[in-house]
Image 1 (cartoon, rainbow, N blue to C red):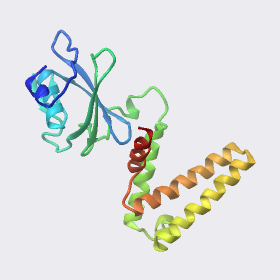
Image 2: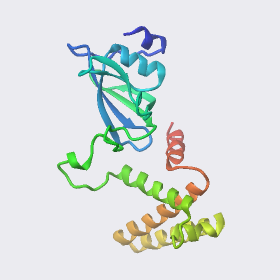
Image 3: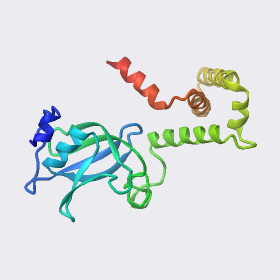
Image 4: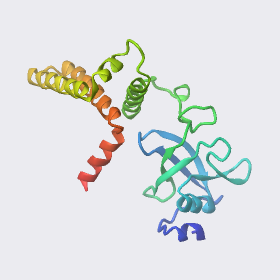
Length: 213
């Protein structure tokens, strides 16, 4: 292991291949979305652990490179993990901007998919919250979110209560389709309350993780 990694207190022992490289998958720490695949050598792995920003080895340019060194779209590392065989790295990171050089959020897009274009659950949740937060900020005339926000937190919180009641009614009726629809309405309005308070779904996930310990 490199001196950089050792200095960072890492106890991991990546199994580098015969080219002294190891594949590194980068995942958005907040949404769970896979952002990119790169390769690390011992030095880039050490810098990633020590600097808490993602470093890779460019096989084409034959040099180290820090993600975002020209675009500014760095990957701020939260955690680095090895798989069970120690031959693949998982980097959990907070992206400062689009990860792909094309400007896309992820290098894995619908154009390169063999399935349909339906968003993964975590993507749909993240997209919904971003829409709610944007509408709350813009307060566009005629916007449903703007109308609720005009009534202040009391109006928004009251709406959460109303939607929760609808969820209870649907659950008691045993209507699964209606329950899914009402739960979607409830989540939408709870996201609005979160955004108004300056919180994100990530804050809720963090609290749930804390309780699990």
